[in-house]
Length: 230
Length: 174
Image 1 (spheres, each protein chain N blue to C red):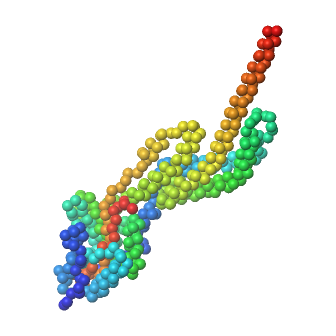
Image 2: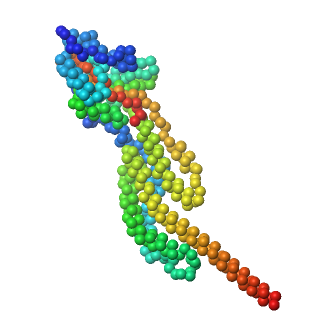
Image 3: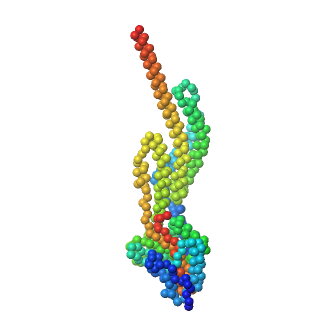
């Protein structure tokens, strides 16, 4: 059977995307997984390619891998990756929202507006080495988002701004300025967050094309952000 | 096979923007809101319980009293303040409503809220400052006028006493 032309992922194997591809064990070429390539997946792929080009979307094809239901952990040299379907994300499991910076939310909305509704969403959480223990689930506190840096700074600025008129009033009444308040604002300045990258993948899958009993899927990168960065 | 969640599901139910991230109000902002509340309540109580004619007593009506200079200026300022009083009361009422709304939505500032609420809490301090500013301007004007007139009175009394002393001395010499 002949393979359609755009079946192999175009990302550079040697670059960071290739490393991610290797780390998450996503295949560049579906031939290693299945003898038959799905026409349905090809149809979706053409749709994705067209929309990405027309709307200048950040979508990139990563490769092929069957669907899986559980959370998978991929150890790395400096950090580990936990890859899971959306319903397994600790935030979703505990009924809480996944907090997304505006640029990433905008990416996702643009993709959806372009008519692409990826049938499955997977999320990769990058975690510090050693935090993931074998056989233990990924918990909410491991992936809980930190206060966005820009927001923390803004909150601190607003707090200072609201206090300034009182300082001036106090100064005018007492005839002197107080240094103690500025000391206090330094003490209450928030600890700024340093985060890891959640990456969102969108999948199209074909329930009729099975690989080891699981539906074959085409994986696309949709967006990512650095936890705590606006 | 499990039913995976789609991009539509993600956008509709499971994501929320950082723009509505709930952040606790910081200590200085809390303190500022409390001071604003106290000011608003204090000023409103003053407006309600202090009889209106007390405000007019501030007007320096008679010529030739303590205020030898600047009386007219003080009259103008206090008259302007008296005219502006209803507007200040209205402004304070609106601001008190905003403060109570902030306190309610933040469960008396214990609950984290989106940054929009932080902006509102910070911004609503400034109209209250208008009331404080008016009172402060009035107080400063009165203080300056009192000091100037006091100095003039001291000079007049000193001059008068000097003239009397010179006069009595000259009588004594004769």
